[in-house]
Length: 260
Length: 280
Image (cartoon, rainbow over all chains, first blue to last red; front, side):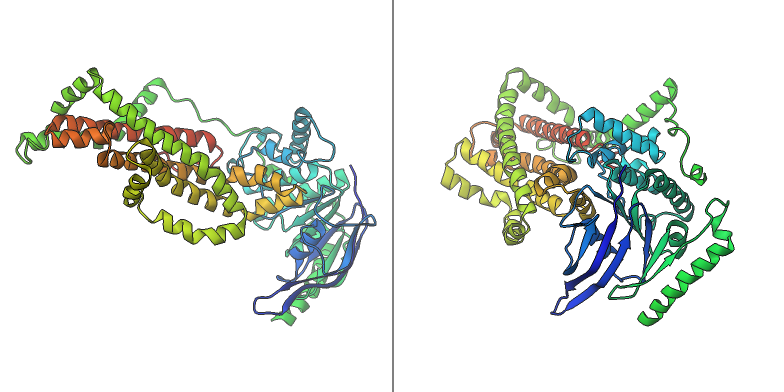
């Protein structure tokens, strides 16, 4: 398993607006994410969180600034980064197993069919879905679909896992269990994770650090270090959690007032 | 771990096998449900002329058409006409698939081409194929070529339009996710766009199937020396009313069978879809 450091250096991205002019989604975003870190990005809606993720994923290019993976500039999409989307993005005509195999089919080193299946099954088991390998997406619950999507993104062993509000469409209970599961997977695989959310609780529960973005155009307002003893039974009920949650909340609240 | 809440330990139970008696009852009610309306139609057909509600000369009771059908089947007339009709409609239908599916994929994939051609496609689709039959006969003569061509023409549009729209309405998130894996455009087309388009392409193919039979019958009525359309028309003109109905029944059986085959093939290819009710 590998992990690499991710650097965003003065990244700016704007979009042309109908009727002329441009909309600056991100202005001068600089972030230093060491290898193996779990970083959560929060910000008011429309602050360019998803744009940030598209840029790191290589799906779009920044207007200026650079994105570096261990010093090498990102110029396009690639299997060194895996993206987990909010809408799962599973291929409905493929079973869970074949969906996980999808990312393995275009790898640099060609795996044999049998090796792909074995690897896909291994990752389905990692997310607790070993018994559901031959189910089609429509036969799975939302939480299970997102587990499959996570397994798919992990299976090709990317250095960085990018997650775009992956649990936003799930009910509260499922979300909590998947958050816990994700932390377990992170501890086990040691991946660098960039996790985007608009949920403050989620950010504090998951992140080692939480980067708070400003409203449009998005900039890094502040990075909050999260220090929690996560071995306790219900981490959300501890005073430390409350204090750090409030810290992130106030930072975000200030941004919301600016917008409103 | 809280994930127990959402993850059953084993695969969910398979639906329990029904007892033989219950299965039999279910099948019988199923068959009954599906045949009752047709039985009612046949009864009405049988008794409306017998009770004098309609003229017996023009609407022959259903039971009297069956011997006619039997005789026609025995002396080979029915088969040779059916064969002629099937060759025309299936050739046209097959050619239309071969032409329209690849063309539709191409047009759908290249957005500018689609935008450019769409008004033209709409115009052609909304011009009833049969209205163009005289043109086809004028240009291609009265032989097989013009008949097969008009079937091709009528079948191409539903397949083409559905294929174009299938390609254009593929979930963009799927494409984005494939792109994020670094797949080149051709691979994305092969692994995402194509399979995602299959259900709607089949919708077009099924529409084309019924168009193939409709247009074939009309083309044969206008100018042919064999075929079911010709046979129905000729029987009417010779006042062989029972034969006419025998021909109509044959057409209707062919139509239903053809559609059923297409539905079965469609199901095979789209088994991954969420079931949307039993009868489509």
